[in-house]
Image (tube, rainbow, N blue to C red):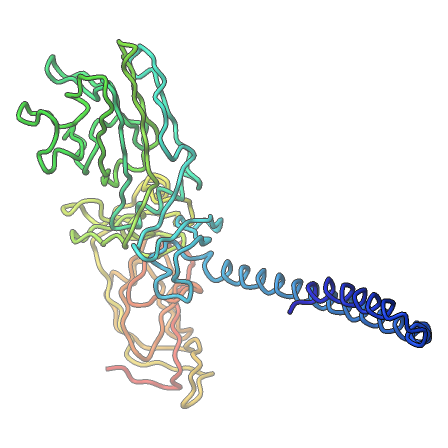
Length: 445
């Protein structure tokens, strides 16, 4: 029984008891009742005090529960805000369907996104979900519906670029309102608008040139025997019909708007419904051995710098500066300046033995070499001063250099940056190349 129920029942019992005592007409009982008056008052005061303490305890518990809930929410935000898609959540403790703060474009400004973990979709909604009535008008495309998504366009573009698959449902309801007329040429009454602002006339699939609706897949469109590819195109009676489809071309998504026009009869009417953008999976890397700033960012790199790029299978390798901290995944936003061609000449440098003054035996710490001996090509001496007694190479000719370094006992540094196996750097005159090791003395064969 709860405290509030007890609080209501006790006064009723107390009144019933008094009535029973008075009805006995027993003076002794009345006298005892008067004598016990102080006790009854004191007992009632103690009961009220107990109720007050219980209420205060309940309030404190509610406050603590609210604080705990806020802490759990904050912890969830901190642990997911650097993830990019719902795909990244699969192997985390937060793998249940719901809203999460994610950062698809890696801008450091996470946005709230719905994750359908059962179906594997990352979902982004917009401000005109549900059926929208097409306003009656006569001009070409005179009805215009524009969509604003719940997150910035850069985050939407990043999600699409990083996902293997994306889709968006579209439903056109019609009453004597065709989408197109192909009998007398090609005249389009309705179209949707892609993310670049371009008109798109297909209502299903991923082929921009195939102006079809969903019914075309199973040849169920009205009058399909007359090459009709949408129900509404052949709906000539003043009755409601509809065409639906699933748009899956990532190059066109998301849908940014819808236009319709050229009504000619008061009996015509139409509605349009555009669903949420849904994406799943992780985009696969190209098998053509291509490399761009966008592909580097999609692979997880986020450090600005010079990188080797190859735009086409038959193109030469070039060096580009990639601003991987920029928002989005468009190549024109990430690539800075003009590409620099690589000089195909190569220079060989091989250490033969090293001296490390500060190194200690069996130490895990690496220190810069005090000196070394090496063999090298004549071309290397043209571009670098090789200071054997200091253990460094100093740049004599500025330019881009690609380094391929492999040694399990020695680390290679360009300035303060360690080069692991392969790296590309722009070097100024005087820049130093150094080596580190944890061996006092080492002969390298």
